Length: 502
Image 1 (cartoon, rainbow, N blue to C red):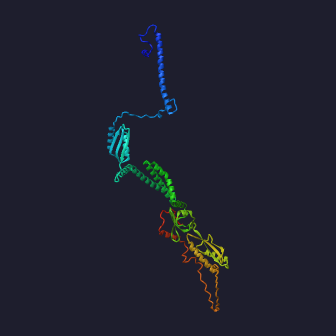
Image 2: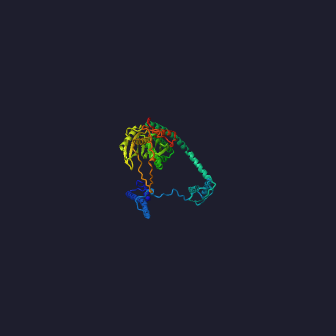
Image 3: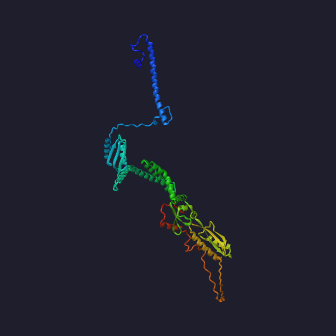
């Protein structure tokens, strides 16, 4: 090998070795040395490759893993420590002094002490909170050349007269108020602007709806709905600026749910409100109409969002819930001014029915308050035990005349007409039993009483008496009483006023 390395890279011999007869032998030796060197390099290269593979195979066989021709991925290989110090740079007393200086500088610990033995730190002392104790342990662990930490710092029991937590809490609250004060001021400004825009929107909606001649209740509801939408938009903007997007979406999405919950909780109130809307739109009656609802008859005074107020002919205010009004049968006696009245009268079996009918029809035809069209009727209704019952029907103008007064007048005139025509009106037959008999005594003829004088009757042309108070309707008088009375139901009247001349 020394001979080979002593030659030049071109294979020529040095000048002192060349001579006649030695050239071919020298060249053969040179070629043999080159092949040997190339073979040695290749074997070394193969040995360098085979050694890691063999080591990897041996390691796989030892761990029971499957043999792979390539090394494991780099990311799955175990991570070696960044640094392993065999000879620490910091000594124990240096670590102790540094830790004690830091613990005393914080002022959080009472009598802090750090003992260090071969890199193991023992911390002693007292502190008020567990956070301070944990902080001291983390400080020691993060100190250079510390192998382990034994945290023996004790927690001091707080004094019952220690108001520092309360003071700290108030201070933190004050800091929170100061931090959010700009958002509060900006939010109040946005709400003030939104409130003003909502009022303007409500007024504009009212004016627009009033021009369209919409019901007053619908005008109020629609205008309030427009104002509510504007307010919700303002609230959404405020929460968005404050960074409370979730709260804003919850409010916007929960508005409908809130309406459903309130509708269930206040079902009766909701029913009355909806009924008032339908009644004000449909207008089944007007102010001053005489109606009958659920057996109650009276003149309509007003319709509010809760109830319908009537004044009965007795002068009493009656409030009927709108839900009841809407679900009940409504008898409106004013929508058609013509009203029909009827009553029954009985005549004797010996009297002529046709004669009695003619007497009644003549009285009805001559009465000033009874209409000719529809024409009155006198019908045989029933054959009773002792009478033949006649049913009398007649019509009158309810706006001008009172049904009760006209009916009283007609009954009085029919009775007088039957008496003048000799038509009897017997009472029902009664049977009286005398178990002990009845004593009979004869009276002399001269003791017979004289016949009684016939009774005097009113003239036939008298249609009304002072007792009946005239035949005019009492609706005007009741309305005057209603104007001077106290209205029991507060709120806006949702009914349209009656037309002039009605």
